[in-house]
Image (tube, rainbow, N blue to C red; front, side):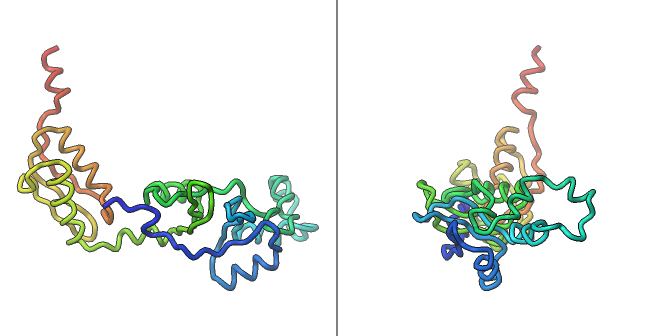
Length: 225
């Protein structure tokens, strides 16, 4: 099973329009206990994201900057000050918004969140219309699978059906999401491909590769040169 964003996303989304005021946004953040929400246009297309950090920046940077040492204010980007003077979601939002689609993989969404250091991503359809939102905690639900479920998928779906190999060739065990695999793959390439595929099984935390690899085809060929 290759988990997709659609499998873990939340369909009920708290969003605001471009003209939403600072006070409205602050109130909605408190009311719904979220740290950010998408900004949408009149057609529900996602045009940006406003986070609690954006609102905090306005409070911290707007005005006279009383109490902030000059050395610090001097290194703050001028654009941040301009943004802090904003009054609406359109002024304060980060844009263009980084989004994911329903069919995107969990890995892709996790990679974006990690790289951009964001806590959630709007989910859009092919036309850019808002259809949901996915958070860090949503992505982590893929690790809720039991060891038995993971083991069954690796043996029956991956080894037998995908790789067309007799599962008896390998010994597979799973403990707390960590997969240990032993055995003698027919080729080094087969073993490496199998281990790489297992790493992408939903719920797998890590793979302890204890396969007894035969010499790779490349290394064997190299003996004749």
